[in-house]
Every structure is written in structure tokens, then in C-alpha cells.
Length: 442
Image (cartoon, rainbow, N blue to C red; front, top):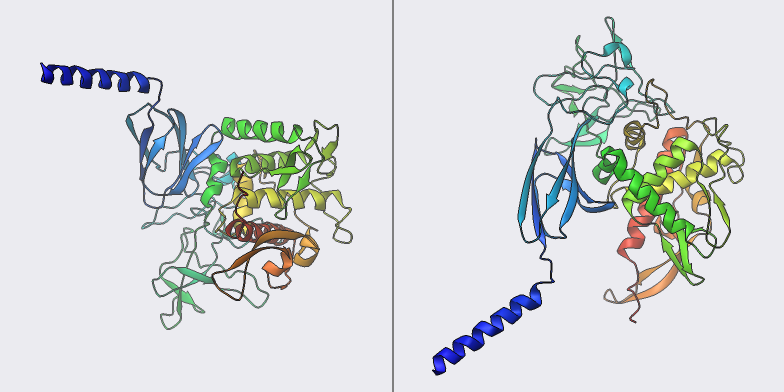
């Protein structure tokens, strides 16, 4: 009798526990098998990035719902939709092949479309290569970022830049000429990179081995997500900005801030939302809206001439220059905090977003834009943790942003200037993120 009673009590407790948990939705998991090697995988739920990185991944603790898996390798990409069910494991394969399409403009070149390209691409035997950009190799480019091409026979090709190798044979420092420009690798009669080759004489083994280097987009591969993903992110960003009860401001990294009340600024810190804002700004030349407080916000670019040259004489009042300052900050906020932004990254992203033209090779005009680090940041300040003489002690302090660079200045112009501005913004973003003061306790 006692045993039966204990059994009934235990059973009742179990039923209560089950009943009490009936309203709890268990998390699910998702495994992504990515091929080939060095495929970059981004997993999104709506506008939120839940994972970005290279290779296979298993994600646990996911909220049930629909997810977008984007896989990219070189200029090829694939996007699929998957559903994660409550308490279940879901798996998917994203194998990127040469047949998969990318979001690159049609003029950017596909195999068999050599007449539409400003360079028809690198085709080789032992590595998987793309088309126009040689599997997105770092290229020799002009001041505006357009590839400098070479004609071999009757075909025009882009020119991958030469890089010295490290002790593991991986690309290290670029080979530069006397003017500080990239030195191109030598191509054979079919436009393929001669392998191996050496510097200074490409077929002399007594020289130094040189190789191409792939453009590392990292999180910016989100630019190849389906257009509806960026559309949703843009809508969310603009909704937040328009809700501001104070005029829109910028944080030390240049990110737009809206105000939930007169004392609380909130930065647009979502990489996807910043990428969506960047796309809109670069395509349309301005972002203009009215906040809840009735204040008009605009990036000040004039739509009728924003593709014209920026004014290097007085950048503080030049609409094109101001617009590109905003754009540089948005691009940096969309990138990996530990990454770098150079001309190849900026131009490649512009290709994927359609900023460089959909039907013809028209590159965005960066000419006349100038970046001077000390002018770019001016007297901007940031509040961070500063290490004291005791290495275990940090104090919340306000510092000049230029102190992050040890007051070392940097200047660059045209496309390199824009990339330098974005890269400097990214450096500040990484520093402030790493040394951010803890949130105050409620």
C-alpha cells in the first residue's frame, strides 16, 4: 500500500511537471555542412546574425523558427532557408559549386561572357577560381578602385597583386613598386597566374616566392544575402531612427544614434542594419527622414551630383565628402571588429550590392575624397576603461579618439582614402568594444 501510494505521488508529480512545462518552447539546434574548404557561412534569423565564420558549424539553443543560411566562396554564393523545430536537431548542406550564382552584377563576368567584362578572370588548374576577380583576389587597381587590366592576345584580364609569403607559405606583405602601388603577378597566355613565380624575376627561383591573396570579407559576406534580408534590416534601422525623441547623433565610431529619452542615446550597432543603411546611402546619395521629435535628419549629399567629385578643399561643408564619411562609418560597423578594410574590400562589397552598376562596369566615383585621420576624428572623445600603473586596475576615463592611434596621423585620397576612413572607424570600434565600461547595475 505504501509503495502504491509513493508511486501515485511520483506519477502525480511527473504529470504536474509535464503540465508545468507545457508552455515552455524547447530550443532547437542547426548543423551546417559547408563545402569546399574556406566557405564562409552566415546564419540569420530575420535581421539578426546568429553566426558568421568559416566552415562547418553546429548551433545549439536556437529559437524555433525560420533561418537563412548563406554560404559564399570567392564570388560564388548560395542561400537557403531552413526551419528549426522546437527541441529538434536540423541539418543542412550548403555546398557552393561553380554553377551557383552570386549577386555580382551581370557585367562582372561569367565564364563564356568575356565580351561583357573589364577583365575576364583567372582560370587555372589546381585551385578553384572565380571569374572577373580571380576568386576575389586582391587586384592591382587605379586611384578610383577600378581594376587595371592587361590584354593578352585579344582578351583582357584583371591583374592579381603579388604578395610575399610567410614561413607557412601564406600571403604576407604585398610587393610594392617605388610609388607604393601593388606589383601584379605574371599571367600566362591564357590569363592564368604563373605558378610558381618569384620576385623580382618571375621565373627565377633565386628570388622570393610570391603568391596571390584572397579578399577576406568576413561578416561583410552578408552583402550576398537575399535582398529581402537587407530590406528588413533597413526597415528596422529606419524605424528606430525615426522614433528618436532627440536629434540624431553619432557615437565616436560614427554610428548613428537615436534617443529613447533625452538622456539615453542608442547606437545602430547591428552589422546587418549598418550594411543596409550603407547600401541605401551609396545607391541614393542621401538618407533623409524626420524623427519623432520633429527634427529633420539628412546625410547632406545632393542627389543630383553625389556621383561627382568630392571637394578636397573644404570637406567639412562638401555634401559628397560628408556623405562618404557617413558611409565609411556604416561600412565599418558592418564588418568584423577584428578585420581590416582596404580598397578591395570596399569595391568588392560595392559590386555585390549593385553600387558599381548592374549592367555596365561603372565604378562609384571616389575621386577627390580625402582622409586625414586627425581631421576625421578631430576632438572626438570616447569613454573607456584605461589601465593604471597597477596592471590589474582599470579606471573609467574619457580619452581623445586620436589617443587610440597614439596620435599618429594617416592620410590617403580617393578610393584609398575612403577605405582608410572606414578602416580607422573600425579600429576605434574594436578598441571601444574591447575596453567598454561595464553596464551600471540597476
